[in-house]
Image (cartoon, rainbow, N blue to C red):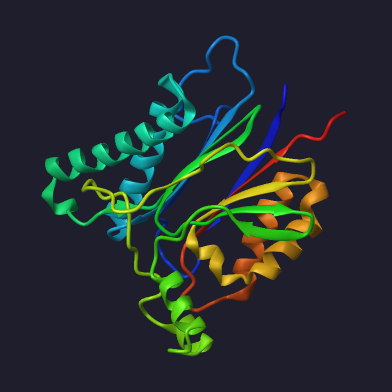
Length: 263
């Protein structure tokens, strides 16, 4: 049976509130985590949500999304891709219901990455711009789609319509094209098949606050701390974000997951 090791770490950055939520099932003491079933196969479910809608709304939305996603994903049966989509829909419906109860929360929402790690590897569903990263053999690859305007701006750079520096600092860069808001979700990314993980691989779920670090720097840090385990990787990434002291640093949260090395 494969066994996974994970750790999470976060920073508020320059904000005076935290809108990110991250959770992993099972193994964490959490009031909304479903009970471990008999004969559990060693799989884990990791979920990360970056809320929006101000201090109260964003924090509430991200926590609700994580809670509902894990509960639905763990308790439902059937093919995993369908369970991931159904869990996303449950999370979206929960946001809609909460806004219906309290119209003052209108406009709240969240990104979401939900990933299940099992014998076949990792499968995921995501909405928004929170990156799901694979570290393998010293390199970083983005596994999920970016549902912000950043890819569109980068295409404009490639076409010669703007410079790379202009695209990097464009205020539209972090505008979302899709999010979990209770309305119909415009764009959803779902893995087509399980991604088999190898010894030495790390999968990083992150909020977009991690984008303060260049991709090459993320790869360097994971390589530097990887042998020491998931906790060292998660803490190392967030510590580096904090040390940069960006004046407008967003909340940044990571979950680092790897296969436990064989004894």
